[in-house]
Length: 273
Ligand SMILES: C[S@@+](CC[C@H](N)C(=O)[O-])C[C@H]1O[C@@H](n2cnc3c(N)ncnc32)[C@H](O)[C@@H]1O
Image: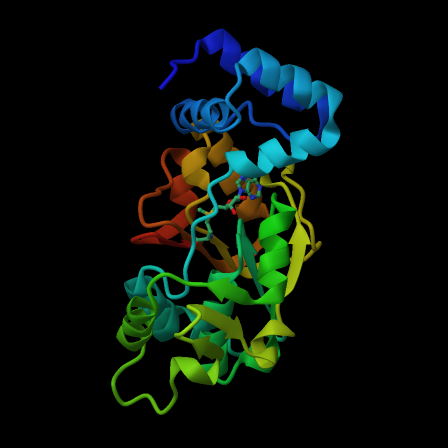
């Protein structure tokens, strides 16, 4: 694979910056470089050519931004976290009306629907307002359609079973239509109609809903940002959460430095002091 120079990477980020509202200047340089290298291969062109096209064609810029972001997600991803949310987190907010929940960087929405299932099972579905946001409108369109081509349905069913105990009197197919023949699953209307999606760029540090949140999910997003940007976003989340609100980040992410002292930490679950 072609190795890119620091100058080329900066040139690319500057071109996006001056032709749009996107700001990749504080993304983690390592993963960003890998994505850019892949782009030059996929489009079979140099960074210089990419930059020229980005500056001349806004549609192309949008396409490039979409291919830079990693959108992998799945329902009941990391089931042990969902068990903790089910057993220890949700009930803390049972008397709030509404319970405001935000999935920042929700990608195609599987995490949002997972949370809605937990709320339904806890009897708190009607009390909750659940929002999903992402930088990428294509993934939000998939989230709104609720139609997924899946690779591993048995793993999802296993993760679902691991989250709830064996005595549960409901199953995954209560919430999804599953066609094994076509490897397709479709979110049923009850969940689909409840989720609210909106385009939002976390680097803007703007609250898109103007509400204080009880639970914020931001899993497997911050890993692509550098530490300074991560800390600005933690500070921003803190300002936009109620006292005692919960922030849930990814399995391989953490809060470092002074900002960490403003939360009680339970693994990757952080509660605002
Ligand atoms: C790997 S997915 C994580 C999906 C889900 N949270 C999960 O853990 O399963 C990361 C998502 O973050 C989004 N993203 C990246 N940069 C962003 C930004 N600046 N603002 C909002 N979303 C962003 C990407 O478009 C992508 O859909």
